[in-house]
Image (cartoon, rainbow, N blue to C red; front, side, top):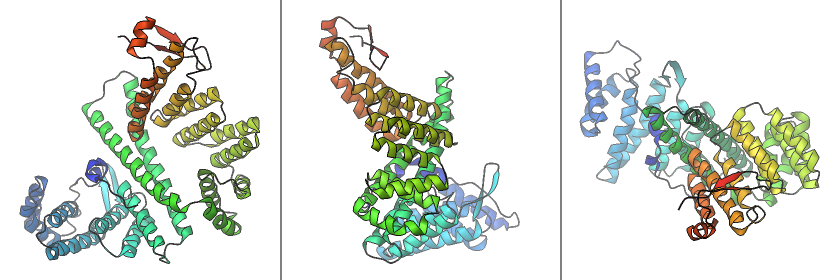
Length: 472
């Protein structure tokens, strides 16, 4: 599946390319200083034609003078490519753009961000180069892949564009499908695991920023205009991460069947049995695909023996769950929470346990774990959705009348609404659930007939919550 997405919607990339006038040397001619000022002023108002000649002069004569030469140069050349009058002219500017990235890396491999100096940018620069190849229909897939791979292997931290990470995998997938020896099936799976871990890291970084804002909102303190703007940016970035991760998941799903995974991991087990990272990734993939095979047991037990961790304990909990040993499973689930030290990873572990408990019919415990997850990450919208689904599934068993039973859906809808409010990456899904739950709740006619508008309905079943009937 080819990736198609209008990335201009994602401010994530705009932030990364905002020009900063970082200067390497003050010992330059007045002509360079003057022409830098001229091209920068023109580029700021998107008059790229006027910017081109003075920019080329600075680029040629004093390339080490300012980072702005390369940041604005990227924008100038992309505009020229977009507005080229013929293929020959377009090809010339594409070639020059790719050359510019190499010059950028040679002259400004690092940059200053705020008070932090010397931050490596090789990953950002070369992932941008790889993306430029993709965007301009570069035919050499292997060269694109090698460019992305160089960026990732040399500076994974600044390789943070969700779009480029997704195309890195897409290019690897395309090479695998045409039988290129550079990307075997095992390489493809390893690449998928590496990139999903990178996406998870991006997700957590965004969640931390969102949670700080949610905490301030919850305290009743008004957000500043900058915080309101930042929240919109974080929401957009969260959507980007979720959307691009979904796309690479769709590709790997075509290849990662149990019939393929089990022989592959069985063959590689002896070689990797002392490698906790490999064991964890293999076990996780078998778990996701629900491969019911003794190999999963072997992987999990070996992983827990080598390096007891939140993941290995969680997997042991699943093994006991499958055997019907619910108390033993819960013991391992608890251990997985204890072993996890990062609060955001702990939240995810608690959520996974909540999901397993729901599937076992333990609704109260499932909600408790979901709420604990939210205590560590308030922006974990899927935890609210899980709780909402628990409420909705109890509509027929809670309440002493048909009206009160259906009133449970209002509680479910309100909980889904919380998910939409805190987590932009699932907002559309949450809103759909909210509409569905409200559609199953008592109608305005039902409220009028029952005469209960504004009254509070208490649920004495496991829910032990209440909801107010809407006013007509």
